Amino acid sequence: MSGSSITGWGSALPEKVVTNADFEARLDTSDAWIVERTGIRERRIGGTTSSLAIEAGAAAITRAGLSPSDIDLLVLSTTTPDKAVPATSATVHAQLGCSGAAFDLNAACAGYVYALVTADAMLTARIGFDRALVIGSDTLSSITDFEDRSTAVLFADGAGAVVLEHRQDSEPLVLASDLGLDGSLLPILYCEHGGYLKMEGREVFRRAVRVTVDSAAKVIAQAGIAADEIALFVPHQANQRIIDAMIQRLGIPRERAVIVLDRTGNTSSASIPLALVEAADAGRLSEGDLVLFSGFGAGMTWASAVVRWHQ
Ligand code: ACO
Image (cartoon, rainbow, N blue to C red; front, side, top):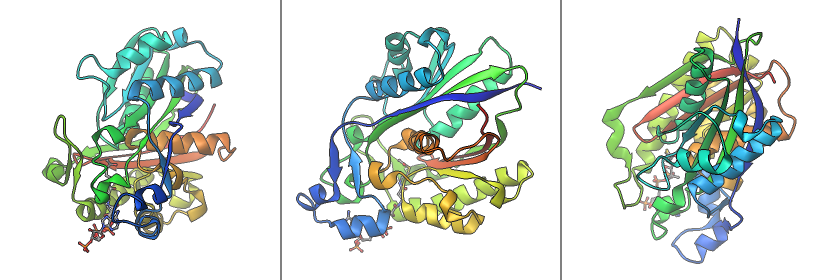
């Protein structure tokens, strides 16, 4: 038996806090509407995708007790790369001083689960990689129209990262995974080059609940466990009402869900690792715990995984 373990984690948020009151002053909206319809109270805006990724990645490497040169695989999930060419992971790789391979992965807000599953598969395939840094970093503020109240209040910036280390004697990390996409739903959420995010919010909401509940239920069944065996549920942080609907339909006790969106808004690829890092730092994870990840995003993509937490 061989597998990988999460041995380090870290996150980064810009310093600038933008509250609902700040939007109230500029747009036809209110704190009450934003809190009631989304659960978001404030968010962080600023930085670049690479600068946030570097900060989160460095923290994760330090937490793992490693040096950047110990990392031989860097997977960066992002929808908002710094440049068209090269990949943002090249900047992160160079500035951190990592070894080996690096690439960007774009599966929108489901990207972090895609990245985690991909990195774990590459480590366990024994094709030359031993330690992976898996980062989710996005600066959605760079593609958000701050004059459009229907999207401005939702999106924000941040990064989160974990270190995965392969071990010959370790149990598998990923017990079950489900990665998918329905391209017929592309028109409900997209952003042209140089433009802003366009979203049919109500339709995204409806579809998101359906695809994530189906996907999460699938991995719970594949893992051969019951929903109440999930110790921690780490959902994509887009809307509190989407998370509430998922918890209710999946039968996961509410207190097991990690929520950071009230303080971070929707940070796309960063949302799941930001939530995971906060839970890990708060001591909410014990050896052997089962963790359920589930996300959705533009495409429409979705991704879920059941992971066993062992360090
Ligand atoms: N303040 C006040 N009123 C607003 C605001 C705002 N910020 N935004 C929209 N409204 C208005 C609308 O104009 C509409 O008014 P109308 O009835 O006069 O036309 C009314 O509120 C209701 O609009 P809905 O869109 O039906 O509101 P809903 O309850 O669906 O909430 C929201 C909108 C928050 C966007 C919700 O649909 C949602 O969260 N959808 C999912 C979005 C999502 O998850 N996106 C991310 C996907 S992937 C990624 O992360 C990039």
